[in-house]
Image (cartoon, rainbow, N blue to C red; front, top):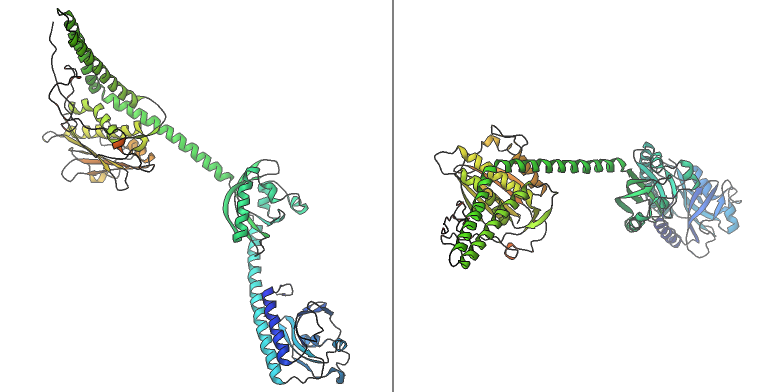
Length: 578
């Protein structure tokens, strides 16, 4: 290995300067030198700062002119010349012209034996240089050679790194270029050139600069990367765009590192993100189509479910409509009375209005679940949403002899969800529970619906029925698409429930109750800080059961009793006939 090109760092030169200064002082000579061979010359590499020293640092002298140090380097042996003026072999030595007539020097070598130069002392008078001085010179030479060993090891490591980098560059796996901080591109591999649409001649001629490859809107991000490079010596990979030669753009991931502490040159690694961006766009489009398909399927499921409730809903609608007709007839009777009972008429008209509003509410709930609309997330109170679904399924529940109880926690936080989709989940779970309990003959058919906080401070909704329960082997499959235990079921209802809950960041699961029946639960997280409580947002309170006629309630209005906990009224009064 050739070491002639290795630069000795300034901190080592400073250390060697102290060595020669101490050497000159101890040996009482005007000159102590470290010489380095740089063919065809030899250079004063380090010179002692002692009085009377005629040698200046970086001074060059040609080889093959009879210098003392030449003999030391050729023989790789120490050389002692006490007095060159009295030695025929040395009386023509060029150093005599500088008055240096005595010399003691030893060779300095690189780890592989290649000569670096010498370490020597010279005097302007005769000097025999005792053996202790020679031992001292050897010891100082050894210290210098230890430094050279470290430099050589660093050089080998650098060459190995450069070899690896060169292999990486030549392998053309990713785009690589060597940069200067002022914008010049010193080198680039074929992958990078293909990436930006330039050729090697553009690099050699300097027609392309890495600063010009950056679009205007990416300049600020690139400037921040340069500041990071100056501060740390490296840039963590980040995404940006490059301008191609034809003006088109290419998305890239780029990272960079400086070569040294000056940080004015370095290497950049560039990865083409075109395919990844295309794949991401396709994934987004696929996700969009999936969401659309899910919405279509969910809508179809809602329509199908509402179709199952047609008879019950029809019964629900007949009650307020029948009450409107009966109250209207009663009102006519009060008008025909002599004299007309106007106060009674006014009260009857109020009942008609209330019954009309009740009918409108039922229709509104049905429309809300059946209509096809894009998802719209809003902050809702979970208890109110659950009670609306319970009211909607009231007829079906009563028809199947099911008693519904609720345990709705107070003060639950508002959650940001799509109201229709959330109510579809509750609707599907209620219908499933009612159908599951249809096989129960002897025991009561009971459905407990409860709400609470979950462990992560979101909300938890639970539905526990008294049906035959779930087969433990099926628990892992009840939410799978097309999995069903019903003879006529498609097996999509629970799968849609899971998709809706998970799309809101929640979880849904099922289990068996410890006595009998099944338990279905789902949790929904808060998507924001809990700053609004249901207490301040119009909490839905359960009315107390009443058995007296309300002043504003029609005596012809009637709903079957869902449970005393819900507090729905079952009143049947007749207006006087005229």
